[in-house]
Image 1 (cartoon, helix red, strand yellow):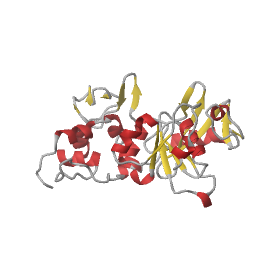
Image 2 (tube, helix red, strand yellow):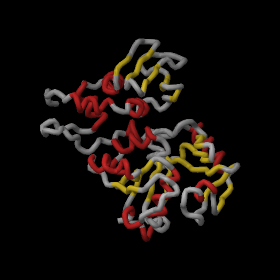
Image 3 (cartoon, helix red, strand yellow):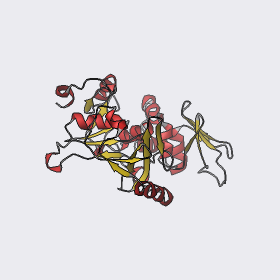
Image 4 (tube, helix red, strand yellow):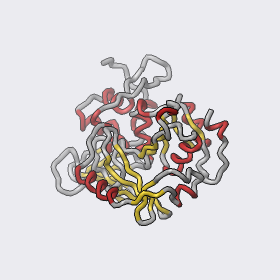
Length: 287
């Protein structure tokens, strides 16, 4: 490994999204108020004293005093050098070029191949077994989506299975007018709701990733049901998937106001208004 220094702006980029980085190694990291907490990986403890501040982009353990940024966490947790830690987060670095653009990110099994917890899978199966199929659902109808697609319904909520990167149903989302709740806590990394093409024979080859479920349905419907749409349900999952699982999607479904940002990053986009009552321009979004 070259001894060339890693530019500060590259280090800063590696330290962005510290919650996403650490949750990749600590799946039990949970939101507690403004911060996140878990049992510390650097010493033995029964209660959680390890905290992550998303706003400050720092972690700290009140038990053993370990602390630092995302790069420092990966260094200590994985026993890597500073440069290798930056590379582990961003992918293979190309420091010879002037803009130090990272090459295609390395997908690591410890980040996106973890099996779901048995207890979470059992909760999910139990809930799915009590659902009722319905041809229409108020949540989807209010968002200008297909009215003739079969959905799962439970006590007035739209029930969505979440599937991880190795094909397990690891969680269930219940969507209602009050928001989204999950059967097994916040979605684990890599878990997505998947809208399959209406017909495999007419699949257009696009796999579009987005965050919000109603938006996912609107994208699917605007694409005439020919595209596969992945909905991460949660921002951290979306951000992590974009940076570490490029091989799992071809386009990003986003609000037009965010389109320029993704385009600047060299990503293919499907720009569709988030406003559920906005008119869909099929010529623009389906080109």
